[in-house]
Image 1 (tube, rainbow, N blue to C red):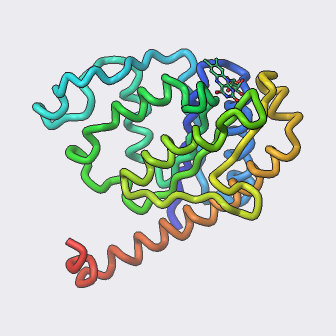
Image 2: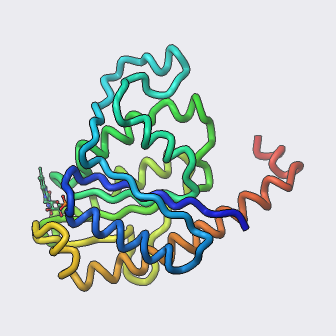
Length: 218
Ligand SMILES: Cc1cc2nc3c(=O)[nH]c(=O)nc-3n(C[C@H](O)[C@H](O)[C@H](O)COP(=O)(O)O)c2cc1C
């Protein structure tokens, strides 16, 4: 079986933060399940990612975003991934501005790479300083991005519901290490993502061999 590319995107602008460690734990767990998974992590930390300015240059040129900065590298990684795990710190019960910019700048994907993310797997992780400060609401923009692109969102796994959640108590990576309940959500998420990514990859291969059925979906 071909390698399955699992991409982790960290939306925290901080090094050694709670979010970066939460994502690493999930990616390491997935790697340890099978060599079939090729994991890759990318972070907004230290990157220049301007927000979308709705210039519509992408629409006119039928191209991906024309702003020249570090977004290009994550754009390519998103296009090549078989499964994407997006992790964000909770900012005002939402995702970070940096991650929001990454997502909105993918706007022309529907036009330039139509259907490229369809039936690939998506999962969300959030870390919040307050126990009930929006870890669930902050997952929605991530999940909405996946749904908007026809991706298959996974979570559940007995304890993780919408995805991985870490109550960091604003203690950066130490907060992740100390949140034993939250760590269990990460362990479960790693299993559900790994399983879903195999099912998605095998399912898409099988579907592509069913020419006459595909024709009916067009
Ligand atoms: C601008 C800002 C807004 C925040 N808003 C929230 C919030 O609404 N709810 C919450 O639980 N924590 C909030 N936090 C705390 C962070 O979500 C928390 O410390 C997080 O774990 C940081 O992740 P990091 O260490 O990976 O950067 C906020 C932090 C900042 C800087």
